[in-house]
Image (cartoon, rainbow, N blue to C red):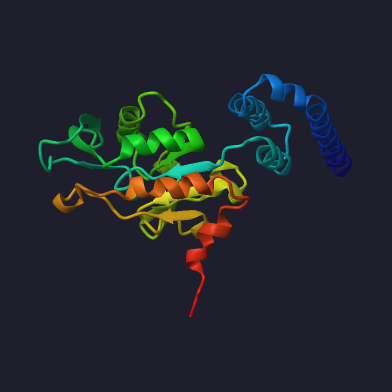
Length: 248
Ligand SMILES: [Mg+2]
């Protein structure tokens, strides 16, 4: 009985997808005349987001719909030492924000430094990708920092330590938690352990701690042309996995 129900459910989903494809084929030209491609994309994303949150869909069907209709890939960004550096003792007077956190649970202050070119980096990647922050830090600290670096709330998801996977007294990040096809997921992280479960999806970046010689760090800036190109490939792993190949 369960098997029959499962077959019927899959069949219903296929018919729905075919119906949607035929509808688009019939009316796509009309849409093209009247709607700019960017708003078409956001329309598609709205449809996909609605479907994505509908638990009726099997993971396979959801992934198919996301691949087919969502134009944006998922870019997952680490926070500490990738986008910002926070310290209880200010390194100099150029910190951008001082936040009060209750971690001990005594209150303490953290001084937050933004990595050079962070603003321009976020401005562009939030246009090109669905952006998520995935940090091993606690939300009590990370939430106000993300609020500060993303005042316009363009970053779509925030995942904190409770969503990380413990590994040898540290934390790793399993990208399957996003329930997206891994062919369209990219993680940028300064810690190789963080992306050890999905190395083919990773873009390593140097650790940034605002030392005096890192004030002119341009790692975020130089990534932009690469990220602009990467959003158009079918499977990001075919490019990012290249660095894992043994060329000896
Ligand atoms: Mg980090």
